[in-house]
Image (tube, rainbow, N blue to C red; front, top):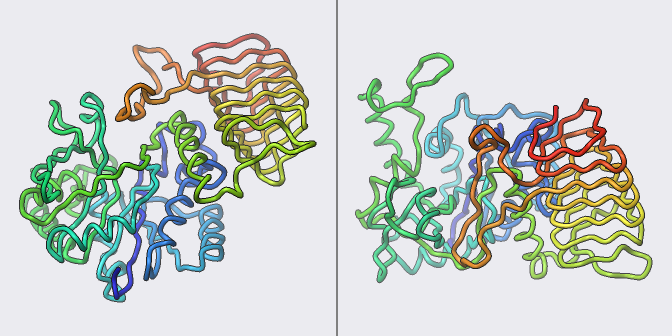
Length: 430
């Protein structure tokens, strides 16, 4: 599709790594490395990128101090996908546009004709080659492409909204999270650029320098205003719309944001369903002497599961997990080293690393899925609290939590160091 190399930039940015809405799970692992459908969230991005023709390298950009876990992930990914993968750390949170502009020299090294930018906290089929083909068939050679999808009228206002020319697919108008309805076509956070984008970002940077006190972000920690802090959506797309430079490719494949822990279970369902065509070997099957499988289930080879257990649909079992006799697990993610003792029941929950659920205990949450009767409904990113109360959602057990036998946990977030001897509902238990 392109004669020269293509570089993929996955923008992880500050909030994706800090994962405030992803707590307490983000206390133990950076949000982009949280396992979804059995593999780290970022690996789904990298697997899709590795299929792009003539792709040279993958750059991860974010404001996050690299650690041993991130370095190990990068090393393993490089070995598995046989491609260069580097992490570039911002000196401050620079926004989706400021980050790629700061590292523009690394991105344009090798004179690529095009490069992708993917936000890390999205779940998608990642139709990257289709976007390349679309860019060749639509617009000018130096045009840019946004991946879009259709949302319902109410939820569209929670995203960037795109007004297009239906004949040419040119973006005529772009508004980020409008207060009133603008369009049901929303921004998916996946972009195809060429190096000309840096001229447009540079123009905003120059303008920011000239208008330091009126146009810039204010850093809450030290009071500095940064001209480098640039948002692709508000600062770039809004200005490019209607100039014949920006086009939207609308996908009919699945897409969702992964903002909260509840949305991780929904994303796991989408990826597990995709495995039928992309990775059928990752899906468990019913075999003699194995647990009963209902629907799509991922089981890590190191897990030890009693054959009388019933798993699925939409279940992901991590490394070293132990599941006893008669256990029922549905719509849940069970993380590394967890121990589910005999006859316990886990529904709509995430069981944290090295946690234990006692015999006959019940851990259950409320699913936060999109409306199944609306084909364009998206998952709502609920806040942790509503009117001073914990929002009913999935149940989350933090790292090293022990749930005693015969205890019932409903719609709760449970952190370690708490002696549980009764039922809990709609609470954060410290």
